[in-house]
Length: 212
Ligand SMILES: [Zn+2]
Image (cartoon, rainbow, N blue to C red):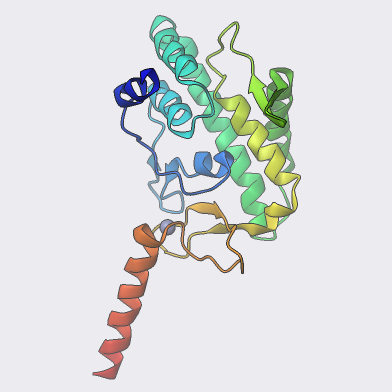
């Protein structure tokens, strides 16, 4: 009962989480990144905390405390947001280069590694019912705490055989990254409803135009 009530008081999700691993969802927070004017979805520290809330990479309690802390220390919060964006763009540079079969920019890999190392210093393994997961320090609370699970997620993806399954959505006006975990590995869209149906409708329209 307590849990249900608590859930109801939480905010509506703000981010579309379609990427799979949280590092890909994080990369997608720069929307339309292929356009001359991409759309920044992390406009303030609050957005970064909301991302952590939507993805549940931190607990609700941690997120609430980050909101409060960011109001007490706005300058530090802005710095933490800038760090997040630096990590995001470095992750994209590395993962994007792999996807495009280009050589990996070493400066970007160096940046990712710096965040991976910081994340490792704050991570410990916890066991729940025989399963292990990462727990990230919450005492003392750090405004960069949302970046630790994101950096860890990038490290795990980059070091895994799943890396070859990272795709960009086939919709030209989307191109969001996702992990193709489908059985035959032929997923083309970040989301069927968001992009797939629209593209199919357009293809149908173009076909029927030709037949006229
Ligand atoms: Zn898409």
